[in-house]
Image (tube, rainbow, N blue to C red):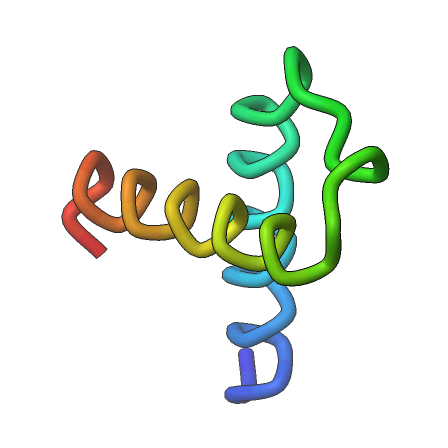
Amino acid sequence: MNSIDGDIDISNYLSKKILKKIKAVDLSKLLPEVRLKRIDKYLMEIVEEEKI
């Protein structure tokens, strides 16, 4: 596996984890800045939970 494959795998993994967290929240209804802050919050939670 080269680094590009690894990056894609991690990106897919994080995308799936984020999607699980936002099922109850429709991000399309939020303003772009709020949406980015919410996604950042979810990423931080995932990093903390998974010890990435």
